[in-house]
Length: 186
Image 1 (tube, rainbow, N blue to C red):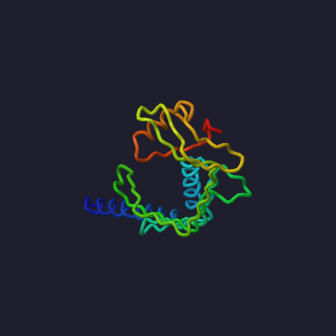
Image 2: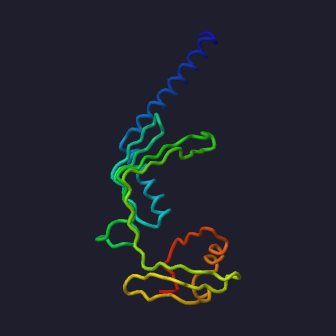
Image 3: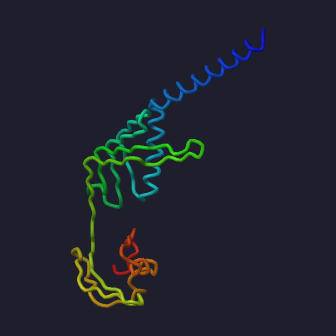
């Protein structure tokens, strides 16, 4: 056998192997095994990011457009099982864009929520002024759900939230308080 024939056979075998791997990968991405794996990973990440419990009824992944459709997305927070969930979405569409295959970089290109329903429970809402040196907060007006005392008045910031919270509020214009579970006012 000549060298040219051997090289041609090796190239043909490699091309056949690549084709088998590509077809096998495509078949796997269309399988229920991949769908279950992807759902588990998505739910784990959502639970970790939200601190809640996530449920997803179904997943439809379109490899040709790198688009995932998640159906029946429900995220529960600390509400009781009888209360409505924190978030409910009939259909969540996520489009992806591959930035780099070698560096495993994928960016979000589209995020579409169809019929989102958000339920928030608020125990208290108040409007306050912070002193320039951020040591005193004055609550001028407040609203509290039944069973919660009013917090109107002047308070030391050290007794009325964490130092990090007051620094963020003083820096303005926006601040996000992620948890009120340790609120010293209650």
